Length: 137
Image (cartoon, rainbow, N blue to C red; front, side):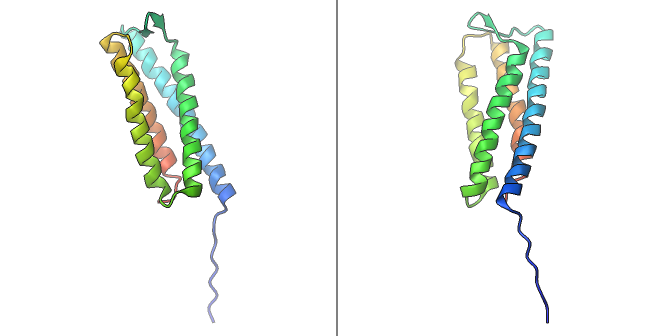
């Protein structure tokens, strides 16, 4: 006689791991976008948008906020989507592309626009794969 034991991870522990991973990715992405903005500014790229300067810490703050929104989206998809990883990647890539639109339209120098778009892409390149790895395929 053979006995088979099936173990399943509980939803709470899966969401806990996802949240922890997501927060770590958000912190990393925030630091990275601040570093990119600071490097761009040091290289002579203006951080002025519509005549007002964006503080380097503003890049980190907004990156953290929107990364954590992404983690909430991932948690919802982990619970309700048939293919959470695939759905998360498709959704977040589409949202990343949409996030570039205001950067193109904003009243700023072309180099500033490019720097703004680069920070979006850096954050997405850090957060999306890290969070996606924690979702079921």
